Length: 314
Image (cartoon, rainbow, N blue to C red; front, side, top):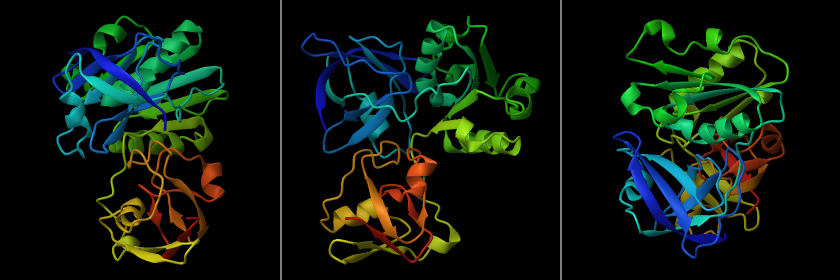
């Protein structure tokens, strides 16, 4: 992976838990351009790499990231919140697994910190005079980032848990029945996203119209069929390793010295993808398309197996 040397140019708090970082190139040049929905990998030292959405507006000389400080995180948010102005940081070239679709109408639905990629989308849609609406849901106004930027926009609808109950996000009312040439984008915590996507599908929205991005995958709650674990087999050598319910396939491969590709270890970057040659995958990533999954693609860092043995092309 190609890394870019950057520096923290500014650091502010959007809420008590959300820090906003403005990064600039260390050599005074311009960053690579990016499209709405893109993210960068941030190298935080000691092999820790995490992905954060670029929340715009897109400017060649500046990248803006917003990071929620999660108490039970795996270290990424704590390391980011420890960064100070003037501190160097290494980032990747932007990548986009969550692009805007080529449709006439767009519905953006954000939950909490999920506003970050949708903010860049909103900027692009405004600039291109596209038809869109943004629904922004949060527990309270004090925990919603970028309110100053969004409050004056008549296409933004706010939904706060501690305010008027009639204004809470209602997918039946706020999204409604499927409409042709309309794309829906959902980003936020897992529970929020499961609720929105589930309600949308119940209304008849096709999965192809629903575009999602998650910030990680919970591996702490295996399904009943996985409580005893499963075996991952390497096609190149025939070696077999047991994957317990508290480890990912990637964890087991790395622990056994297998040279397996990886980056985020959360199922959102796509760097660890390998092909499954035998077995039935239990896909838990948020990066592969349905077509890629049908073609045998598999994320070793987050997905698991419905079958007792999963053979991968390694």
